[in-house]
Length: 137
Image 1 (cartoon, one colour):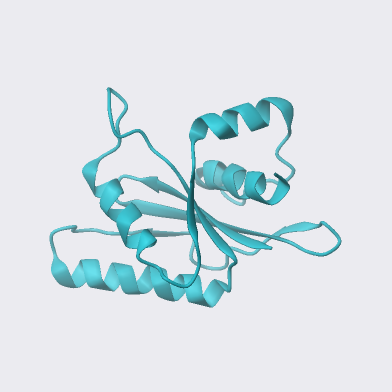
Image 2 (tube, rainbow, N blue to C red):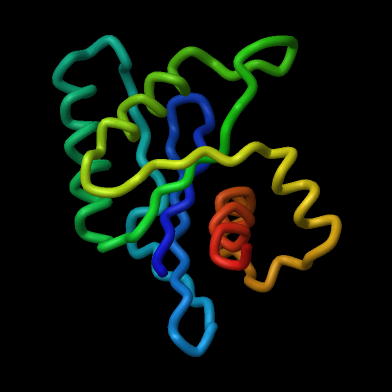
């Protein structure tokens, strides 16, 4: 199984792709594109380019599942409006299912389990935890 895990921070999508082979070995196969930024959410051509870029990236990765780390929509620590737009752009991808996982689910999982991989970059830590969780659980 090959999973693309996504963390959304403001106007940036952070990718981590992990694959579990038949021998239960987990390898990182994110590729060159580690993140994609939407500079101007009000610029139509940038939005269209952004959507086409992420969908093309998903196609090139040949993934089985897309998973997004959900964010709070209410309260003091709620996410920005643009992050929910990005989430919607990802959900328009028709070729694979898109699933959401709560940060609380990850916290509970990692209280009992260790992360069996090392993220390539520190900013990919949460997406790495998410991808690993999907492959192990």
